[in-house]
Length: 440
Image (cartoon, rainbow, N blue to C red; front, side, top):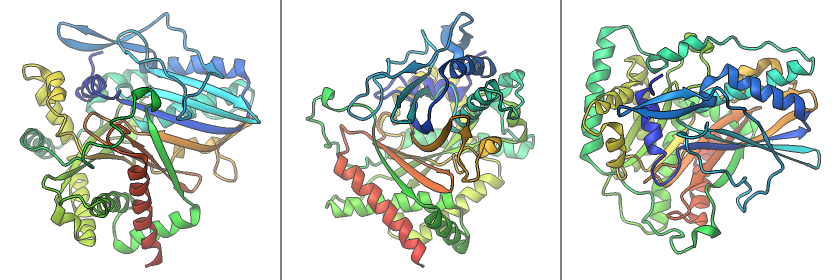
C-alpha cells in the first residue's frame, strides 16, 4: 500500500530535528504473566498490520511493506535514562517496524514504556491497540472479554476516512486546502521564546523528551466541564484558549516584546466515523492551525467565543480534512512533501495541543472496574503519561486526556530552546487560568 499524504508528511517530518514519535508510560499495580503477554503481543501485530510494516521507496513513492518474518517481542527490565525513560534504539522505518514496548517490574508495580512512530497511527488508534492487547491477554488467561471486530480491507481506504460525499463540502475543502497552502508559504510564525533555553548544555546531559505532568482531579474536572457549559463552549475550547493566553502572560512576565508574528497553535482533529470502528491502527486525523495575534490574546473571552465559532463552522462545513487536501496538492509538485517539510521550519507552529484523548480507554468498557480503571487479571492501570510529537521549530507539545475521571496534562518541551523553569511556569500559568474558571 502506498502511504497516504498525511502518513508521508509525518514520515518526512520524522527526518527533521526531532523524531515524529509518540512516547509514553502506563503504570500498572501488579504483574503480568510474561508468556501470556508475549503471546498476546505477537497476536496483536496480526490484528494491526501497520505495526509490523516497514517503509520502502519505489520510483520516488513511499509504500508500506509487511515484514512477514518479523517476530514481535517485548523487552523487560532495561536500564532507564535520567528522564526516566528507556534508551530507545534510533527508529528507522526503512529497516524495522516502529512500535517498541519495554516493561519494568519492581515493588509490585509494572511500568510499560512505549515508542511509536506517528506515521503508523494516531493517539486514538493507539488507545485501541492497548485495549486489544489487554483484551487478548485477558482472554488468554481464561477471563473472556469481547474483542473488537476489525476489517483489514478497510486499510486501503484509510486515506479518505471522514470524507464527505457532498460535492459542495468537497469543493470547500479543496478551496480551503489551496488557501492553507498559500497561508503556510506566506508567513513565518512566532517562536514561543527566543532560542536560548539550555543551548550551552552538552547533549549528553539532557535526553529527549523532557516532560512535565500535571493533573486536575475529578471534582476540578467536573467544575471545568460546568464552566464550559456555562460559557456555551467545549472543554477543548477552554484548554486551547487558556494555553494561548498563558503563553502571552509568560512572555510578558519575562519582559519579552509583543508578538510581531502570529502565535500558531496546531490541533489534531479526528476524522473517525461509525465505519472507523472496524479499522485497524492507522492515522484517521487531520490538523487544524490557529493563528493568533497579540491583539487577539489581549481579549481572552472574545478569543474564546471566536475559537468556538471557528471550530463549530469547520465541523458543520466538513472542512476538518482541508489540511489533507493541501498535502495532496503538495505531493503532486516537484520535490513533493519531502521538499514541503524541508521548507516549513519556521511555519509549522509555535506549539502543538493534542486533545484527541478526551476520554482515555473509552473503548475499554469491558475492562473497566468499579473505579473506572482498566483491570485485567493481576494488574490494574493506575497512571499514564503521553508525549505528543515535538516537530522541528516547535518548542512545546502538550497532550490533554482524561482517564478515570482525572484530566492529565503532559507537556513535552525542547530543552535546547526552553528551560525547565520556563516550561514549568507555562504549565503553572495554564493551570491557574483553568482553575480560575472553577471559581466563577
